[in-house]
Image (cartoon, rainbow over all chains, first blue to last red; front, side, top):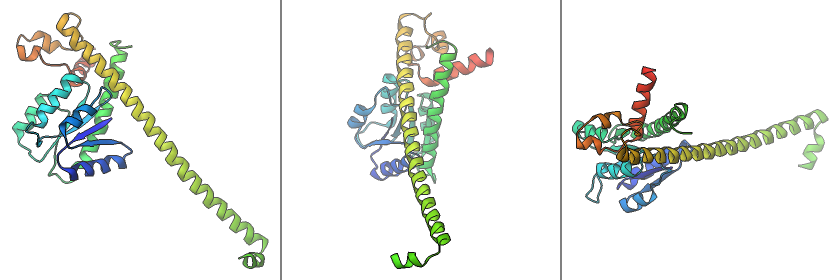
Length: 134
Length: 108
């Protein structure tokens, strides 16, 4: 399950279409409360916008999610590409950071969703191989 | 239409029949492939959801155990070695496990 939180309705629709082309279903939310309710342990990737209307940032939302669901892959999208901000996200275990003003950013997100799935696959198969899990 | 068909030779009738059958087969195959693709996607999604559930429960148990017993924590070497409060409170995520496993493979 992939879930996307953004207050820009255009961006929500754009990414939904991009993922649908790849046969993936994206659940979109513009309100943080609804988004939080939808994230479950089945969610392997969340896409979060950095600037939210609620007054909280994507970083706060991401930290809350990772504390609850540490296997989730947060992909951050933002129209702010400040290096310090990106480092902050990466230090807090964001999976990838995508700059929204880049051409074809939606395609980049789709690519990262695939990467997240591959990493989940790889880690789980290795955990099984090294008998950390059965 | 009936008159038109009657005027055609047997060979032409057979040819038209064959072309129509071919078109039908192509349309059938097209929908069949779409159906298989959708089914494959659903199965793939189901599998990923199962993996995510398993990964989350594994990491949650590691994080819980880490608080109880250092020895039993499997993957948080950096967190265990560190004395800083910030690192000890850091939740182990899939990234940490991935990094740990990469180290395990390199040193094997």
